[in-house]
Structures are given as structure tokens and as C-alpha cells.
Image (cartoon, rainbow, N blue to C red):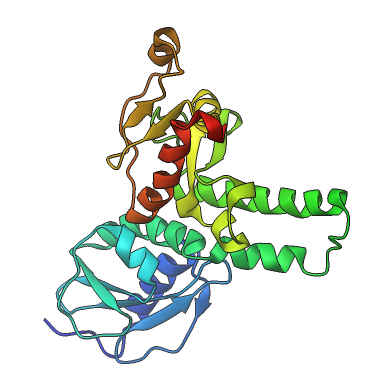
Length: 253
């Protein structure tokens, strides 16, 4: 099969629909049969192409998205860093929302939004610093909701009123704003789990399974119900090392 080059009118229209419906609304000139799109709200570019025979192709240049997308790449010449093949347009549509979600949150997209929103804000008094902190925490929650797809991975709860943006390394203990706003330094937990996690009464092992502090009694443990382990990246695990140490160190509380 050969790459359709230049793209036909129909192919170009389909590529635009895939991109525009999934947050990539800045169209760039086609090159070598690949239509490039970018976004004002997500980092990186995507490229879309079509082979004569029905196969659709996606190319990405965002390392963070590539690392967490968890679909096989193909040995195909083209732009970007990695390329993917789909037997149907429906399969391509199915993966695109996650591409956008990851590009909107990784690796430092929340930090850039925070810098933009707090630029010029006064920070000389404690009250002013608290305003800046609230801006950062709101951005962090918004991007955690995106990253975790609005769902507590432990319990399956999706009601926003019952979900909390839980820092793994606490805001006050972070060395920089980049660390504070890194979505890998956060978990989206239901309110009860967040309370236990924040107090160091529960933490998680490298497989995302709960570990309970000896200070938590059996009745409380039984009430902390969960259905599935949290899917963690290596960056999450690195942050959890410190949380695990503090959770079982009473002097740190």
C-alpha cells in the first residue's frame, strides 16, 4: 500500500474532522501526504495520513504522550517521533481523545498555564501568596481531572463533587512550581481516600495497591473499599517513595 500523496479532498476533510473534534484546530500545510495539526490548549503536533487501501496513520512528536499511550507503533517513514496504524477511521477516532488528554497535561502544560495566569500578580503579602496558590491548585485539579479522565481509579467514582486532587508530595514540600503542578505528583481520589492519603493513613505500593498505616484501625480499613489498583507510571512511583516514608513515620505528621 502507498501513502496517499497529495491527500484527496475526502481524505483531507476526514483528517480535519479527526483533528478538529479532538482539540487540534490549527491546520498546517500538508507535507508528503501527512496533514499536520496543533493546538492552543495542548502541547506538540499530530500528523494524519491515509494509505490507498483504507489504513489510517497517526504520527506524534510529544514524548510524554508516546510514553503513556500504550499502543504499538509501526515501522513507517514519516514525521514526528512515533507513528501508529489503524485499520479503520473508527479506531483512529477511539484513540484521539486520550492523545489530547495526555498532551494537555504532560509534561509541564499546567505549569505554563500557571505562569501565564499569575504573571504580574502581587505576592508580597501572605494573602496575595494564598491567591496565587489557589490559582495553582485550581489548575492542578483541572489537569488531574483530565489526566485521570474524571474518575477515581480506585473506586470508579466519577461525581466531581466527590473527587479530590491529591498531591503525592504536598504543595508545601515541593521544591518548585514545576513539581507542584506536575500531574505525576497527583492522584484523583474520592474524598474519603483523599482524607486518608493526605493524613498518611494510607499510601500505595509500586503496583498501585493500598498500603495501610498501623495507625488505621480495622474498621476504618474495611470502610476504605476499592475495586482496582491505580495504574502508575514510573514518575508516580518516584513521588510515592517519599509519601510511603512519611506515612509510616509518626514524627513526620
